[in-house]
Length: 194
Image (cartoon, rainbow, N blue to C red; front, side):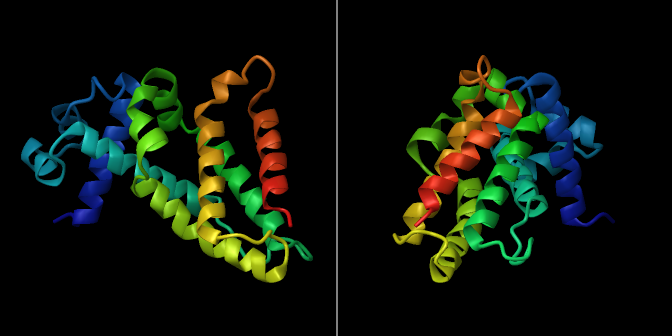
């Protein structure tokens, strides 16, 4: 018998493929069940609708990006925390700009992100903040990050990365993805510098 986690991952992998192929609005739990090779009741027991499934999928994908672009305490000899944090944030932005699921949603159904862009923090945001806030505190202790409430600074970093990624089309006539991430790096470094 397959583990719950294994089944959940199969379902989310199928949901990702459906969203990348058809978009969020045209993805149904029946499509996801068929593509994942599990029964519809199995999917419906875990997620009441496609929107909830996609929200969990986005959280999973962001969590993967955060781990892959992981912040480590000693990447380069002599680097301070701010330099590593800015590099990490730029890596996350770069990965999101290249991620087929995120780009599909931003390009074709950006209104689905409205609640999480303008009204409230979602689970994905909280995952990122739990990572960034202690790093900012560490940078304040080593003197490489300016003073201020670490929760506020972490939130500004998060919103800046999110806004850059979701607004990439506003820059497409003047910057490619590499240039956009370069400008984000300058912006974050200046914001966090003492």
